[in-house]
Image 1 (tube, helix red, strand yellow):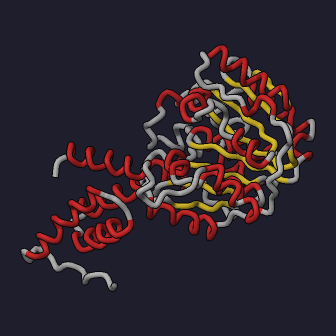
Image 2: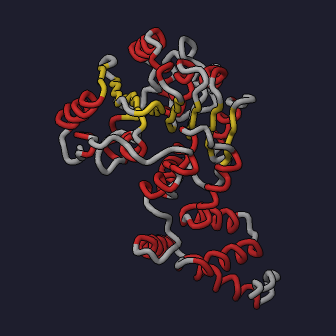
Image 3: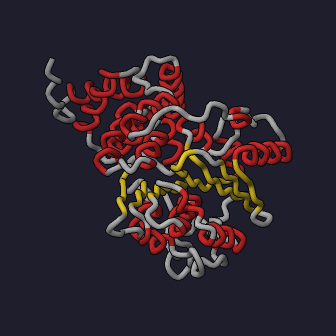
Length: 364
């Protein structure tokens, strides 16, 4: 088995999935609508979303920023927070989604080059506060602190029935840290760092450029900032050691640490590809997300090829041909998967040669 051959098979499998030959999940918007009944929400947003429906893709950086600010101000407001941060607010229904995002991520990950939360505005009519950074700053900026201080003083969060904070990675850190501004909020943090204070997390060598940044002052240690939250959900892959170590620091009575093994180091991307992120937010925004509900939805990984490939690689590396054969049988019985078919053929040959005892054939 060669790596080039594996790559070719993976590309072929992905093309088959795109063509609808795999067990593909519905589109994001379908899933959001599908979950409205579960979440106790209705589907009738404002009659006219105005400029929010206009894509910002293909604009240069200056044009993009101006257009984004115009869209926000048509439905709410925008505010520059120093040279490295920007906040936009869209005022709709009394459910508020607060997202932390990077300018680069918005322009790269979104087909419309709009903040992630805009999709929830369009689908459910939620209000949306987006705090953006130019690069990964962990939002450690006095201008950002001052912005949230002002929101607290104005009673901003008190105007909403439900408040949900969301972010991933450095933005997940910010979602947890700044959630203290809205007591009773729900938080979803994907692969968050707890802090980057060197004396506490000297074992994390991924962000050495942040070692001189102060994580000990206001809105500093993210796990402590969750004490006022109604509930927080921290998603991580326990097989990513540094992410798992940070997740351990979030251990609190009101925090659910949700394990996603064999998903790798880009969980937000995996959640989007599995069509789960919108569903999780929809339920969390209605106060109906639980650990049990997450694990029910997370069964979608059984049809997610990157997860299945990672799982098979682990079984091969740990020399467990019996379990690998069971996995390959299961996958090839349900979807087009050339790599799994080829590996199954190899394992059947080894079993015939007596190298290991094959599992009994599945019952018909």
